Length: 163
Length: 163
DNA sequence: AGCCATTTAGTTGTGCACAACTTAATTGTG
DNA sequence: CACAATTAAGTTGTGCACAACTAAATGGCT
Image 1 (cartoon, rainbow over the protein chains, first blue to last red):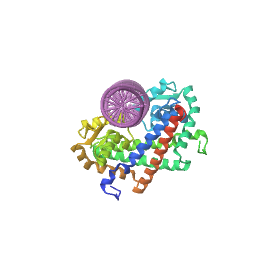
Image 2 (image 1 turned 45 degrees about the horizontal axis):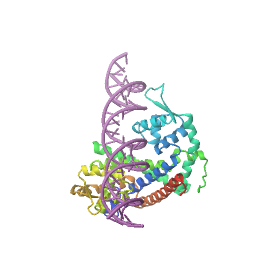
Image 3 (image 1 turned 90 degrees about the vertical axis):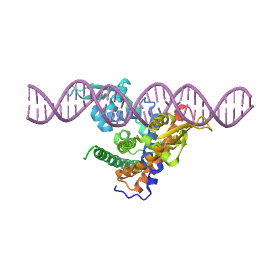
Image 4 (image 1 turned 120 degrees about the vertical axis):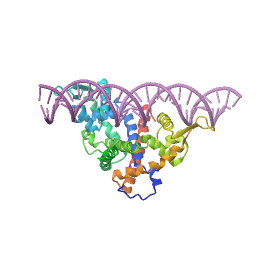
């Protein structure tokens, strides 16, 4: 254990000291606001994230999409099917590599971008944070994600057999 | 719109500038580490949060539990049934108010606390953050949650009819 | 007392996250 | 070339989040 707790073990179990709880709550609060703002666009928040990636990078195989979003095909396949049913994306097997499925925007999907531009602005306004605060919080969170990811794989390896 | 964006609208749609994405990623990274650490205890992360509240506050009606966790009965009812099936909690209708269901720890549930104490320590160590950093990040996130919550209800009221 | 609005749990249905597995195509190696 | 290992997508099953709804009990009000 590399930290030196300055409180008795009991306190560490107290809910209000658990950063994970704050993070989880903030994440769900974001979800709540996005739900309201995205209702007009007919998108859920994860669907919106997929659209963001496609708007930025153009057509991509499911695999690449998953790398950008940290999601696997188990999550993406049904989500993409719903976006396809909504007429926002196309999915077609790559001819060069039949294992791969290329995801691309339909005209309707590309057009939706115009209406989506206001969403991040309204979100930023809602946070009440200025650009610099947002940036620094983001940096901290990304550090956290990386630290947690490597700790999780280390712990998983340990509980399996020796690394 | 109360902020003055210093970047063109296009940049606001860029995934890597979206704080929500970082937050979402961090939240899922936490989930991943908790999944590994809680496997031994036979708990999921939301189940662990429920146990934390019960360990700290003792028996509580479902309603109060939901207030602590920001969750409603739609989420809690099935979750509590699983904890009950696992023998960790009891659920019984209050005699004073038949609408209310009191949730309490079984002996086994209370005993699990001893084994859970190590979890937050290992999480804290994994973050690589010191106590002060954790506290300040937590404060920021709580501010964020509150701002987002009130923005969401304002936006919901607006899209319904005038507030 | 009688009735209605509110409160509390629970149920149902949709969608996401993730583990474990399947299928099919591709790659690497002897 | 043949065949094993790898890779990509999809499927299945479990659990959570949340909206919308139901059922039952309570409390207030006339």
